[in-house]
Amino acid sequence: MESMIINGNSIEEMKKLEENSIDLIFADPPYWMRVEGVLKRVEGTNFDGCMDAWDQFESLEDYEAFTKEWLCECYRILKPDGSIWVIGGMQCIYTIGAIMQEIGYWLINDIVWHKKNPTPNFKGTRLNNSHETLIWATKSKKSKYTFHYKTAKELNLDTVDEADYENGIRKQLGSVWKIAVCSGNERLKNEQGEKLHTTQKPEELLYRIIAISSNVGDMVLDPFGGTMTTGAIAKRLGRKYFMIERDPKYYEYGKQRIDQEVFEDSDIANAFYDKKPLTAKMPEMIQNGFFFNEEMFYLQDGTKGGILQADGKLLYKGKITDMHSCAAKVKGVKAKRLNGFAVWFVKRDGILVSIQEIREDYRTWLQQKTDSNK
Ligand SMILES: C[S@@+](CC[C@H](N)C(=O)[O-])C[C@H]1O[C@@H](n2cnc3c(N)ncnc32)[C@H](O)[C@@H]1O
Image (cartoon, rainbow, N blue to C red):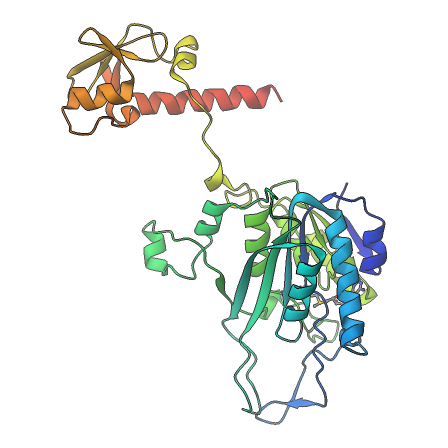
């Protein structure tokens, strides 16, 4: 399946897709805001809230039926190990969440998008509405969905201050995300220089979602494309995109926006921080000439340790033992085992070299060999 941008009705378009074919869905559906009359700013100007035709529904039953229909289609086309994110405000998120559970979705998290710069409550009649909620879910409890835990930590500047981050401090990403609403150059404008879309989402929000819950080459679908924020960020992160938007104006602007985007090959895009190192077993490293049978293992200060055997164990004082227990014995510590890779050195051209360093060389060699065989 290739990337696509479609001008059409999402329910009709999703019906044409094969079941279990999509890796990730992001949906920013109509909220059914039920705004009435003209909202005035404190200084008297009109506020351009969401009163668009696409956000109008007859009744709660009407909104529920629509919500159920598109969520059922998403359920059908999502892969068993894929996941879906749905965003909404207080007007709709409870209805959406209830319907999702009724359909059979398994909820992973609900995330509060805390807007750093929310729209004020002009009349001062209730609390300033400064967040929206995202529901992250899978098709079932058994789903082995993608989650790049360490990449999420790299993206966390919500609970780590900049100075600590610079010093290498990382913390688990939580479920409250502090991100500014879309503004400035990022906000798409029409020919008259006015805001094109009332509910354009910030790129940073989509960047987090797509980076942590999908892989390069995955297919990301958005049934309510709007200005195509999802498609633009999916492309930037090297994912494929399937975007549907009913309004021809948003479709045209959004299409141009995606066309201008390019893949930015980065550690975040590749989820580098979450890659597990290749397995490096001692017998294989010996077979491939990175270590030698019967060679001496030393401590860093040059003290002799065990002699390497073909199976990766060490011969020390007449006994065969694994390198980690042997490290503890030779260092004379109370612990029964130490990390042998952090303790042992071998001689190369008369100089002591950490076996950890040689293992990394082996992994690099193995990776290159695997890549050239693809
Ligand atoms: C909340 S906005 C999405 C905004 C988008 N996330 C962005 O960043 O620009 C919802 C969009 O869904 C579109 N829409 C509403 N109902 C639709 C339908 N049945 N099929 C396709 N698009 C629809 C609307 O035209 C609107 O642009």
